[in-house]
Amino acid sequence: MLKKPVAVFISGFGSNLSVFLERKELFESLYVVSSNPRAYGLIRAKRYLVPFAVLDPKIDWDQLDADLRQNNIDTIFCAGFMKVIPVSFIERWLGKIFNLHPSLLPKYKGLKAIDRAFEAQDDIGVTIHHIAAEVDSGKIVLQKVAIKKEDLPGLTLEEATRRVQSLEHQLVAQWIDLLSPIKSD
Ligand code: GRF
Image 1 (cartoon, helix red, strand yellow):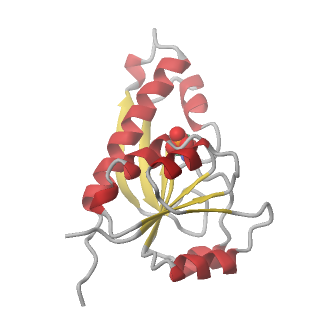
Image 2 (tube, helix red, strand yellow; image 1 turned 60 degrees about the vertical axis):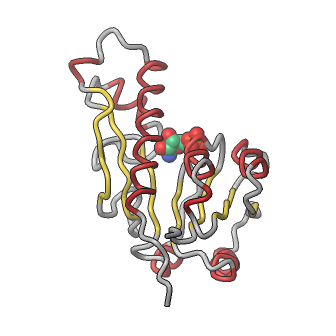
């Protein structure tokens, strides 16, 4: 049974988008939305023949909402999407909009989460959560530790970052497994 149509919101490299693209056949449809016209993720989307939209610098959220609905999108997954989403948009997609964050939320919300946890020599991990009105604060769906603080000494920030990224890809795949199929009625 095909999974619900998903829009993946990106701004950059798109390695997490790749987890979706590699599983493209599982979905009724995929749609990529990028806030950055030069995002490498767009090259990935093109390679997989997945349709995409590039947002204007001043995002028209009503138009984006209409575009998603026209494309029958059911669920939104933000994977490295660097724009702040307005509350009005979040409210329209409540329960159907998710975010990937490289920390063990509620710790290290916001930017440079891996760097800050590393600097504090704290546990480092990954969270997938519902998006609520407040940044990085919705209900947690999946969360896992990538590196325990006792294993940090001896690791460089680059090595730690690579481990977190690899765990992100695993968790995104798990989230896709949990995603419900479309209803046939
Ligand atoms: C990921 O670390 C994600 O958690 C963060 O932005 C990064 C995006 O990576 N919010 P990519 O574009 O999917 O490679």
